[in-house]
Image 1 (spheres, rainbow, N blue to C red):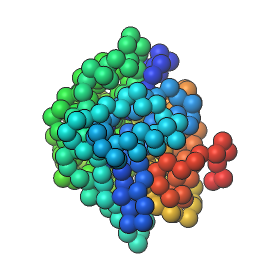
Image 2 (cartoon, rainbow, N blue to C red):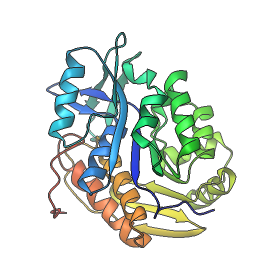
Image 3 (cartoon, one colour):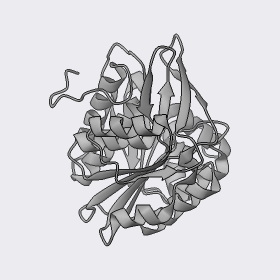
Image 4 (cartoon, one colour):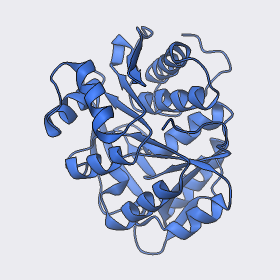
Length: 294
C-alpha cells in the first residue's frame, strides 16, 4: 500500500534534543529538531516532540527553539534527567564524530503529551534510531508509529546505541526511509541483502515493506527506489563547512516534496540542494533564504 500524503495535517518529529558541543561553540541539535526546523522553513505544520531537563541547558534550549521559529508545545520537561549533550569533533574530511552523553532527558519521552498534540488529526511521524536506545522513548515512538498515517524513518546510525534489532523493527514499521550509502552497506551486511547497492535497496524494500528508500551519497548526490523504480540526482558541489545536519535538511525536503506530490526527480534535486547548502554553513540549522545560492 502506498503511504498516504493528502490527508496529513500535522508532522511530529520525535526524538532527541541535544546541545552539540563543538570545541569553539555549542549548537542546539538532535536530528528530529533539525528536521522540524527545515520542515517549518518549508511551510509544513510540524511539532518537535522531545524532552529536556530542568536545568540551564534546558532553559537555553527553549529560547533557541523560539529563535528558530519552532513551537515548544511538544517539549516535555524532566525533573531528574539532564538536557542532552553530544560532544562533536570534525575530522579533516569534514565528517563529524559524536560522543553522545547518556542518560539524558530525551530517553524518557512520554506518550500522553505527544498524543495530546495530535488530537484527532491524521499525522505523519518522523523519527530515527538513536532516540529508541531507552525502553521509555522506544515505547512512545512505537505507539506513535501504530497511530501515524505516514511513517518516516531516518536510519542515522550512532553506534553503539543503534543496533540491528532496533533498525529492523523500525524498518518494518516505515513507509519512507532515508539512509546514506555507508549505512546501506551496513544494513546489507546485517540483513544479508545483495551486495550491489541498488539490488540491496530493492531487497530491503521488499523484505520490510518500505515504499520509498532514499540513499544519500554525499558529494555524489542521492538516489532512491520507489515502487521498484529508480531515480537519481548528481547533487551540488559546495565548499563544505561541516556536514552536521545536512542529512536532516535533505530528509526534510524529501518529505516536503512527497507530501506536496511533486515528481521524484524534482524532489531529489531540491533535497540535494538543501543538504548541500547546510553543509556549506556551520551548524545544522543555519538561516535558510527563500532562494538558495546553490
